[in-house]
Image (cartoon, rainbow, N blue to C red; front, side, top):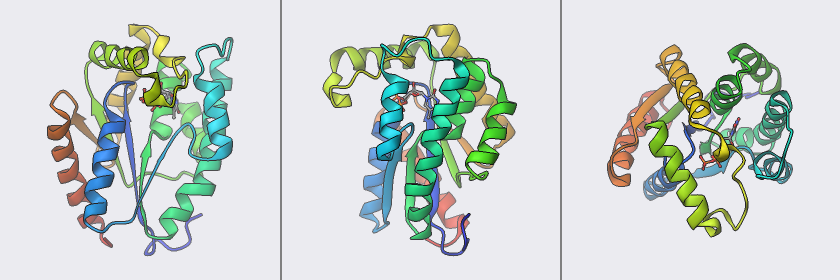
Length: 227
Ligand code: TYD
């Protein structure tokens, strides 16, 4: 558990469909905050630790076949539990701003919505395995399903080097209906928790999207206090 709320940094997560531009935006925000002298930790899920990166490989490789949705959900949480203990909580305790590419909302959207496991199981596991840790702010980059998925597929075809030459295609092979359910689940989370989850229109240029995010983060970080 987090012992001192006063000494806590800020936990900001990024969510959205594959190809919604999260990585670009996290990179820009990290640079923007660092330019203001803020100590920033950038990390991602699944992954973020040595064990988590191994779990990521199992989860995302396109040849991983026959993984049951329950197994998929369990592995996402296994990676996350390790990540929280080893990376996120220590960084927050040091007062750092943690920018995390995906967190439990991804499990609710992809496994709960996409794989139809439902919200209840995801939230129950989150309570047990993540001690209910909630982001201070979640940026949901929203775009049309067709646009995001096409962009993700193009990126993987063209630029395997952009992913360190790794095959991380398993989810991107899913169909439009799957991503439609993922997007609806995301929008339902945002409607349920409007304080935490801010929807950002990701249809503009990367610079426009970055400016919107920067404003949101400045406002939120100031109103939350200690930065
Ligand atoms: P990511 O590397 O963020 O993909 P992208 O850069 O294309 O957005 O995430 C990898 C994939 O893992 C992505 O397709 C979503 C999926 N995922 C889940 O299904 N559940 C989860 O809990 C997480 C964290 C990711």
